[in-house]
Length: 451
Image 1 (cartoon, rainbow, N blue to C red):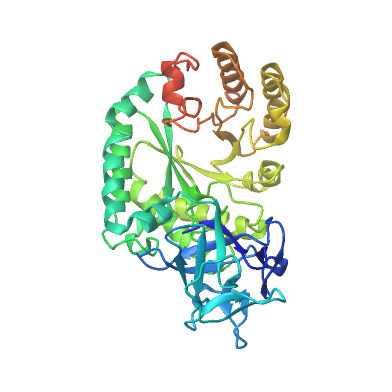
Image 2: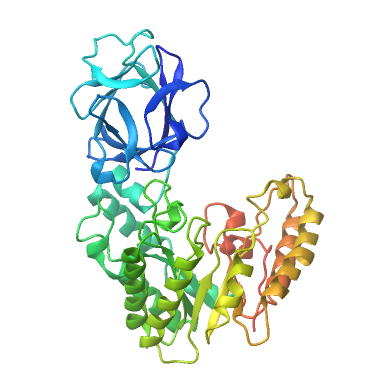
C-alpha cells in the first residue's frame, strides 16, 4: 500500500500521465516522469497482484464506457481493480488486466484503452506491455500489515514492543536528568474495531502497551505526554500519521473530526487519574492541506473533551500548528484563549535547502539567533505555554566532529530550555545515532542537567 510508481509504454516510449494530476483521461504522452506521471497503489489482495490505482491529485483510476482509462473516481469504492502480471524474465515489464477482463494497451494516438486480448509476446513493440518503476514507498503501520499479512504483522509488532522500549529505558530516562516522555499513539488505540482495513479484530493491544508505559512512568516519577500522532485519514500524509498512500484526508468532514474527538475523550477518561499524566497532545503536525478553521474547530472540541474528564490543574492540553513556515505564529493567539494550554513547535536544521550550505558554526548561530527570537515571539504574558516538542542534533553538515555535534546539541538545549513548557527530543531510541537521545547521552554528546 502507498507504493508510488510510474508506467512507461514500451511501444510509444512515453509515460502514462493523468492530465492535471487527475480528473480526466490517462494518456501515454509524457517523455519525463514528474508529478502527473506518479501513481499510488492500493493493495487489494494477499497475492500482491490486485491493486486500485490513485492519481497524483487523489482521483482513482477506472474504465469509462468507451473502455478508456480515466482518473475520475473520487472514492475508492468507485475505483476499478487492476491485476498486475509481471514478466518473470524481466520484472520491470508488466501487463495490466482491467476490470473488464481485457488488458490495457496504448493506441498510436497515446490514449490508453482496456481492449487488448494480449499476445504472449513481451516485445518492445507490444502496446500492452509497460515498464513499471517504483519511485517511493511508505513504511508505516498500514504498510507493514499489508506487506506481511495481518497475523505476521501482529507477531512482529508484539515482539518489537516487548524488546525495543522496556522498563530499563524508563529508568535510564529518569536517571539522566529527563523528567517526561512524549509517547506517539495512533487513532485506533482506543477502539480496536477501528483498526486499518487489513488488521484482524485481535490486532495487538496498543492500549495495553500504553498502560504499561504509564506504570513505568509512575514508578520512575516521569510525566507522560500522550501525543495523537496519527488521525483518521491522516493529517499530513506521512507514514507516522497512519497514511495509506500519502494522501491527507483528515479534517475534510465533520465525521473524522468527531471520530478524533472520541479518541481524545477515551484517552482522557482512561488516564485522568494516573499521577504521571502530564498532557494530552491533540494532533501532531497537521499539514498545510488541513483547513485552519477545521483545525480550530477540532482543537476546541478536543480541549473540551479532555476537561470533561480531567479535573486537575497539573494536566495540560497541547496544540500543534500546521506544517507551514509560520504555523506556530498562526496558532499562538488561538491557543492562548485556553487555560492550561500549550503550543507545540518543532525545530530541525533540516528539510530546507538553506541548511545544506551552512557550516557547523552557522547552524549553531542560527539556533542562537533566529530560533531564539522566534521562540521569544511565541511566549506571551498570560498566553499559552510553549513547548519545543521535537528537535534533534542532526544536520546537513558534512564531516562534523564529535565536538561540533556537542556544541550544536548544547546550543539547542540552551535555547529550547527557555521554552515555558520545556522540550522533547525526537527520538529517545533510533538506529541512527544522531536521532537517538539515548545514544547521544551514552556518547557524551548530550548531557541533561538534573533539576
